[in-house]
Length: 289
Ligand SMILES: NC(=O)c1ccc[n+]([C@@H]2O[C@H](COP(=O)([O-])OP(=O)(O)OC[C@H]3O[C@@H](n4cnc5c(N)ncnc54)[C@H](OP(=O)(O)O)[C@@H]3O)[C@@H](O)[C@H]2O)c1
Image 1 (cartoon, rainbow, N blue to C red):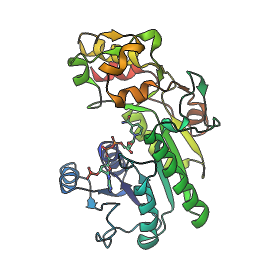
Image 2 (cartoon, helix red, strand yellow; image 1 turned 90 degrees about the horizontal axis):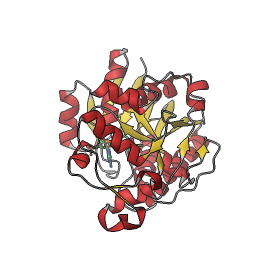
Image 3 (tube, rainbow, N blue to C red; image 1 turned 90 degrees about the vertical axis):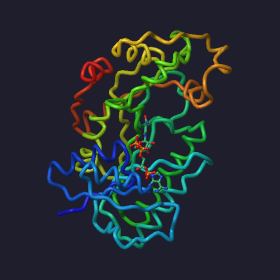
Image 4 (cartoon, rainbow, N blue to C red; image 1 turned 120 degrees about the horizontal axis):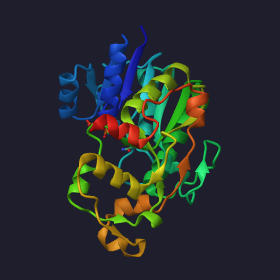
């Protein structure tokens, strides 16, 4: 039986691991910390520890030859390169050539599209450093694929929401939002659909393909927070004009507010043949409350 390896087996990875185990796959989740290893054990997921930045760490337990490998470990929080992915590619030279890698990138690599609808043919133009790190990771993996013949699928994933993944604390704290008519468009995907898509990409994605992963029903970021607040029975946070946002909204959130795009998911539905369980935020929230 082929081994499924999940590098960066955190929240999404654990859900993916459990789904894979349920369908009878052999699974190994790879995490960095002892606490995450204990979490995996509690979730019934076989796991091992490996810090992608620590070349001295024991590799014996990790065998990646012919494996189906999901790479879900995010880049570090600084810089414009992704040393995690660069180290992973080096590590694979010692642990064995996987059959295929499915990489979870982000839609941030497209940069600001001023609210336009875009698909996978749109040129990448990463603006924020976090997006430049992702683009670096994509390119590292593309080179790995070209140099070794290993198969690669890149999933450019929108904002993930679902059980345990809603901004409820932020809403409770009343952190202000930008006025709806000035707020950028954002795109989302329910975490359960994301897991389905990861498995579909591994099973039948076209080698070399990039797929946008979103529900295809974008709305403004303010509409998103309002919809979550309404579904949770919480008061809607107050709104500010964009011009007043810089003093009152975190730098991290401001960097998201600087980008607006609407993602087509046609390729995901038609070429990858995925039928989404939650094709809109309303569908997803209905299932959560
Ligand atoms: N949040 C979103 O809306 C969104 C959107 C698009 C894409 N994504 C990306 O989707 C992926 C999965 O998300 P998630 O929520 O499941 O992330 P998560 O829960 O934070 O899990 C990340 C995992 O990566 C591991 N990791 C981090 N640095 C590592 C290193 N140096 N060596 C080995 N393992 C390392 C962590 O291990 P430890 O726990 O042991 O540190 C953890 O298991 C991430 O890359 C995320 O950035 C997220």
